Length: 428
Image (cartoon, rainbow, N blue to C red; front, top):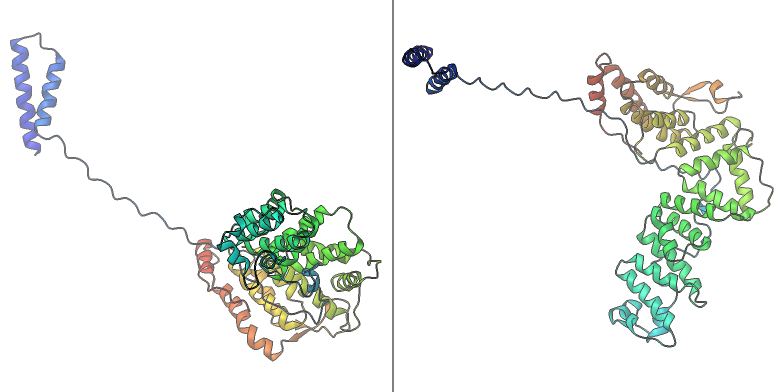
């Protein structure tokens, strides 16, 4: 190929010389154009081969945070049972039920016809000269049947001044809200429907607690506290215990406040229960039934359960749970919190604080003697784990230590990748 190019160049140069010799007026640009045409005719130099695209380097997977459901612990025999205040002010016989609390079918139809039948027949669209509020009440429940809680609450709000329907509307609003709405949007819906009243908000918080929507119960309880500027001592106490029963972030703060303030001066049931709870969670109260160390152990376990995250959490939050539960009592329930929390702490450690995790895992191989006559848990002698607890949790503690030992600490990316590959944590 190169020889042909040389021949073409030589021929082209000879032609140009002859042309210039024949006519001195041919400019130098013409000569350059002739050379370019000759090169083009020969195909020009070969095109370079494209380089191979380098494969991107895969960054090892890294776990920063994890979420896990909290173990279900029954501490009723060891701490005051305040669950009754989670559903305050509902009575024992009251439960959230998505049904009209006013017998609208009996008021508008013959026996045996339900309110759903009336909706299907279009009775809500009829003009009722004497009982217009009944027609609007039925229309609200027809909207419920269509899953339109927004319209149903608005219609009930229009009837809120009806003396014969008002008691039912308070119950209806709570039932419709908890069945259809998340706690974060309730305030706006109630305000728009002209139903944002303290009695209704308290009922909605209790109804959320009753059906297990604790985050929403906490939201509505917080709203009730904000709305009621002058509560009685009994009502303020009831809302405080309901805060603790809901078990969210507000509960930890409420327990902390309760444990540090003077005992309530009231003589009601709520004040007595609050004083007992303050004793269990505070630093200055002793309980003869269990002794100082066992009471402190229950406090540690209660605190650990309250610290268990309800969201994706990083190392620090999981380690605090394990650290508090490590000295908890009863021992078996304490380990149901401590061991999975420590496993989650390892997985979210990002290969840092491994010595700290290993020390706590080794500490959990024994348990403090809570019957010892010492002043603090830190000074109590350690005892071997009971056989039943050792059989359940010692293999998992040994696995934590073994996993830490096998981590390639000198290679951070490899270490994080191995942590990410660990199996999911089994929570009791």
